[in-house]
Image (tube, rainbow, N blue to C red):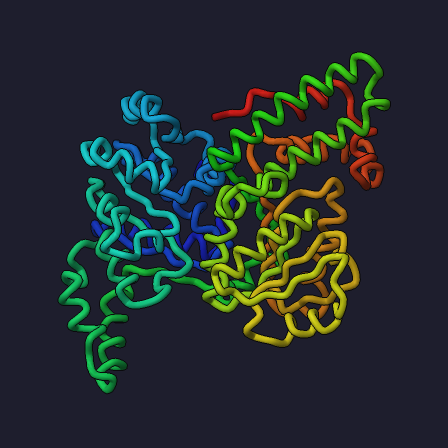
Length: 473
């Protein structure tokens, strides 16, 4: 009743299923396609339990590090009345935070922190253990799987778009956490369903499907598309890695000092080039330090970590993805991610020829799963309706430019629902640019069409917001 929003019909069915599992003391795997709102279904469940005074102990939600902010934002949006703690920080900070657990309804933490603090976490009791992107525990031999298995909770849920990535062992591992013993131990499961003659396989798989049917709920985008808008836009908040944060904070402090000295001496308009330089440098650091510092590792970026997780999920199921950035050097880094993972793709920036050949290959070749595109090179005139997911790696000054890029997939001839993800690094100039854009939209929708147009519209107060140094740890 107090959810700040309305569940779609299939999401309401999902909530009913989660309540059914709870009533009969079962765990389950919610395996909806990416973008269908697994998060909000869990939030609705926890809110319902809170309303009914059944959330007597906190729920522990374990997520990839890159998604902690996103879960936090979703709780603030849909259920601000739930008390949510982000369990993170240094070891000494976490030691203090863990004592605060009884004062909260929900604890958010990463798989990495669970691994480090499992001894202390295993001493606690939780109402729910929720594993987001639960394919992270698909290997029962890993330390992460063993750590998560030690956590005590009344109920357990796993959320994943890909319950089976490689072998049936993936499914056993996740099901064994949420419903221990349901499928026997690992050796029994392998003997029954994996190490069997080929002629027995079909019958055995049918039997397995009957066993797990009540405990896995999966809806694909195609199955519920009549309930979806033609275009779904999702702001995906991202957290920087530690090394990335360190580089960002150092640059921010230097630029802040120089810019305000220049503004005090010669005013905002005459300092415009310095402001632009600073904003561009900080935005590039928010994408990946390697754009500016070549010694950085490929995964030293919150955005690259998140992108890798999302692509692991999307590409295995045959979705096609458009990936836009305005920074060509960032696209080159993303190219390395594709090459290292063996993912096949097309690439387009201003220097590329044979555009028509590349577009045709993406549209017609089922082996090509993604198109990496420079926003300036690919924003106009391309028909890329084979894609049903669009990812904007960085925000553009003018939202209209982003819309033009999105329209490469969302246009006449598109027969599928399109999901658009916009990556925003929390507490950086990216988030603050979005905030200022919203404010300035009221002045004129077409006024701010470029970086220089954006800077012209800034006041000193806006600069204070953009270059604020109190970045949250």
